[in-house]
Image (tube, rainbow, N blue to C red; front, side, top):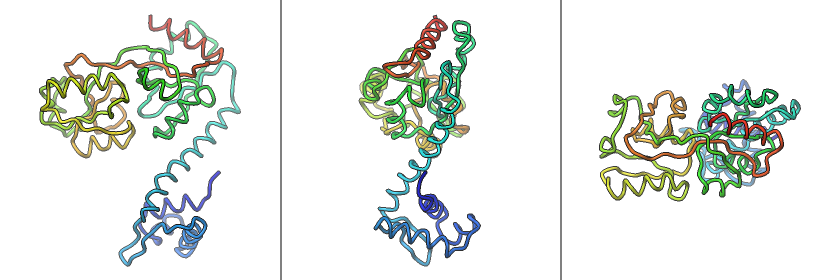
Length: 296
């Protein structure tokens, strides 16, 4: 599916040396060096700075490293989707799931949904939550994945070219490291956040987040707002490592084992529901009607 030299390139970059990568791959250092030299020659770029202290990625190497991780994961996911397609059934709903779009909230409704459409089965399709995958998957719902459960608003739906059905309204919470001073609390006030860095998705991602941002800027300037670009594991790791506070929902309580998600005494929330194709199939339409009945 992809050039195996790319996988060796990742292995060498992570290992930091040809010898260590060779040892972990059970091949000789010469074979590893040969693969990297061939890759650099084929691409016409230098990927590593070689010094007596080891290897460091060049700027070109750092760029290729990030893209290669996405390419390899996408290829693996493609194989999984292809295998799932072999088992395709007209009455199967393929539910996409990732750490930030967990299926647990949706699964709580499943017994009620099956009361209205007992012939429908579901299939969980895992995917990596990256900006590239978000564009690809949400823009092509109905192709390999039928439905994703997640937070949304009209801005996001228009941007991703998909439709959404609200199932609940999820209050905004705050996630903190279990070692953070606030982790001892079971509920927070806005004043508890004074002096803290609060990680918020950048402006114009969601008007629900922007309403909270504007309220804090206007009436609680003691809260230091820090923008970030995308909800993925990197930002959850950043929250744990930096001791910052991350805006979250209760459904993300199990995303990171070293973070605690705590309710906050404010009136800010965001819709949670089903994301699906603007032109859903007959089976998906039946499923959506059953889900709507299940929450009433």
